[in-house]
Image 1 (cartoon, rainbow, N blue to C red):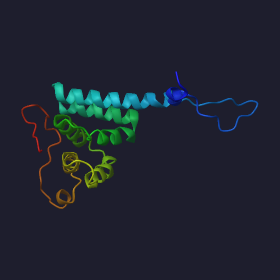
Image 2 (image 1 turned 60 degrees about the vertical axis):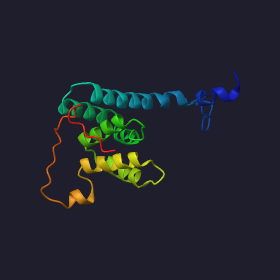
Image 3 (image 1 turned 30 degrees about the vertical axis):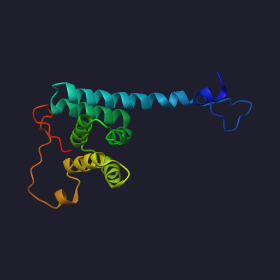
Image 4 (image 1 turned 180 degrees about the vertical axis):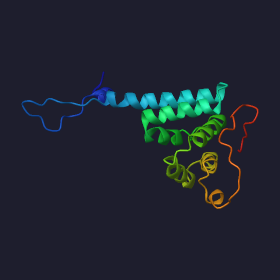
Length: 161
């Protein structure tokens, strides 16, 4: 095997080694929490698209994941909007709406403003912001109904693109 093949799995050089310090950090260990985070989001997508869980159950899963991963969970969920499959994007928009975490707002706004991002993805970001009541139009329009407990089922899913 060539040297460049094992690069990511080699120990990082220790900052300053002394007679008592031989500490090295491994990149593999740093990858495991990220793999768990991606697996959790894939599992939430599967539950959203294929199960009959209630909104409350999904909300509990989201809160548990947020408690486990912190703000990284919300950021990765926003990044997950950049998918080709429109059903998955719609599910992620719904998950972001149910989560309603203010951490997502600046990331969604930035994603919606990037011109190189395909239009359906920018639209999904805008829909998530609207679902979180985080758009200028919604914030200045009193009396608009908001239904956070509306179940996301195959019968009442709306495709916007």
